[in-house]
Amino acid sequence: MKQMRSILAPLLMLLTGVLMTSCDDEQETAMMLWGTWEGQLSTEFYQDRWGGYGQTYYTVWHFEGKPGSRHGKGWEIDYVGHQRYAQHFDWQVIDDGRTVRLHYAGAWDDEWIYNFYLDDGYFTGYIDSGDGKQSFFQLERVEDNGYDHDYGWDFRAQRPLQTKETAEKGK
Image (cartoon, rainbow, N blue to C red; front, top):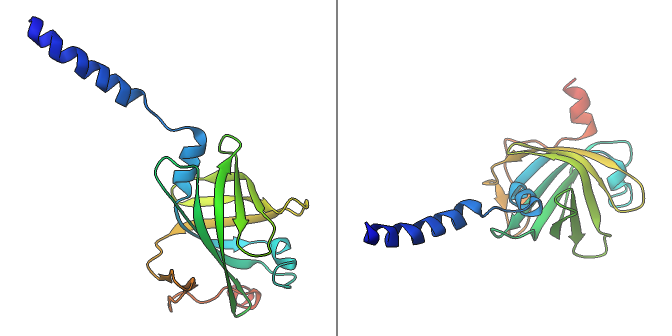
């Protein structure tokens, strides 16, 4: 009996430590972001970037990170008309998991994602660069097997570019 207690006591302490360990809100949000998301993004976000007006653009965001981290690297592909624009970014979850900061390589300002809903299949919310122009996005999680990570383009032939003209034809 004494020998059994000497074995059970350390096992119970170890089990308690494992069961009581959890991730915080920022880590949980970061892990949910990992992967590839694609869908629609409203126009105000792109007026200064690409010069397009009056359209909703198709965009793809990809987030990568390490287990337990609150930050990582990613890339974005925007489909404007029949052009594709790619940009890399560093991302960080802040504000107890309520805000995601995107820091783009190059001359772009940081973007802030907030008031978002995120689950295993959908990522919707608002994004702005701190200038008060809020843009709404609505994305779905997708498999990223069709992406060439060296160049950042989506070569999947079965998915046509979404433009204002193709969206209007589909109505």
